[in-house]
Structure formats: structure tokens, C-alpha cells
Length: 104
Image 1 (cartoon, helix red, strand yellow):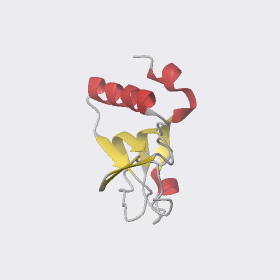
Image 2 (tube, one colour):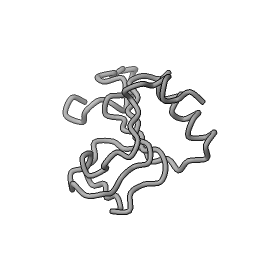
Image 3 (cartoon, helix red, strand yellow):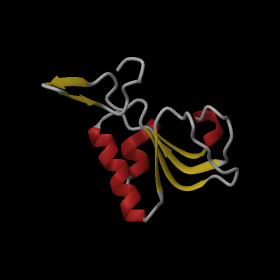
Image 4 (cartoon, helix red, strand yellow):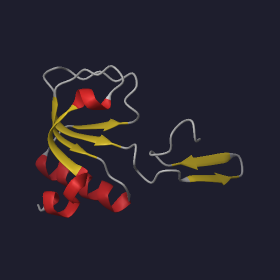
């Protein structure tokens, strides 16, 4: 699969997880992706499934602890996913994963 060429800068290999959590601890993620839209998210998920990689979905990184041994699969950081996408419909609200809790 041509994941690296398809996703370009949105995929990192051996990314330090400590950089992405409030506790600032954790080893390396084998793969670290930050999809910006649904197309990129689907590329990541296709790759993860085709390779049989463990998956971890990361939000803002608060209250998340990663082992110093790292994570052997794909970590998807959703902070930049369709930022600020909020839809009100009746008594329901649909909010994208990239919308900050403060903005919501």
C-alpha cells in the first residue's frame, strides 16, 4: 500500500508519544497519523486493517498514559480532524473529533 506517499506529512514513523500527552510520558508509536479529513482517515484505517496493526485513537492527550515501551501500532491523533465542524439539529449536536471542548 502506498500510505506514505498518499498521506505525505500526516504520517510519522517512530513518533515520541510523550510530545502528545499532558503527562509528557510514553515511548515511540510505530506509526502516528493526524488525519485532517475523512479521506485521510479512511486511508489510515485501510492501512491499519490491511497490516493488522493495533489502533489507538487519541483526542487532546489529557488523561492518557502510554507505556515507555511505546505503542506497536497506529496512533491516530484526531485534534486536527475537520476542526470546528459543529451542526445543531433539533435537540442534537454533531461535533467533529477535531473540535476543541472549549470551542464546543
